[in-house]
Image (cartoon, rainbow, N blue to C red):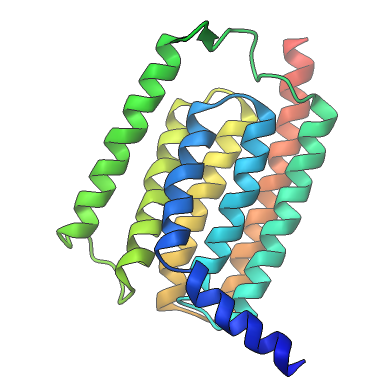
Length: 212
């Protein structure tokens, strides 16, 4: 048991720093740009894992483990939902014509880059009143909030809209946990995440029925 705890304590610092932030920078654009649900669900699993590791910077390891459990439940709900509704694209339009990206994909890539740079500059210049957190936690949380808002703004399907809310809440929870790192707050935020995942499944079912 002691050896397991030692391995976990040695593993977390290596993966909960800038590597976790890099994972956020890689996976959030996939959620925004790509419509292939296999890639979206896979990227969401990676994002939840590294966001849970980021939480170890502001919460005790045991409480951060609760966040990982909550994110696992949310991911399983979304996985089952997507599996029931189909793994194809969320619409019938072609996103890539040969080697040429569609106008929608080019716009999304441009929007992701602009939003990412804005968040980076705000953190670098200390323009936002963040709580006392490390630079990579502030950068990761900012990207989660900004990219989640972007996904929420441009998405049309219930799945993408719900993912935008979940990503935005992840960034908000990361910053708020630095202010109030209590178990009750973590539990309440976890309940909200699970409720959003259930609403996503319900709206996806209605949306699929109406489109058919």
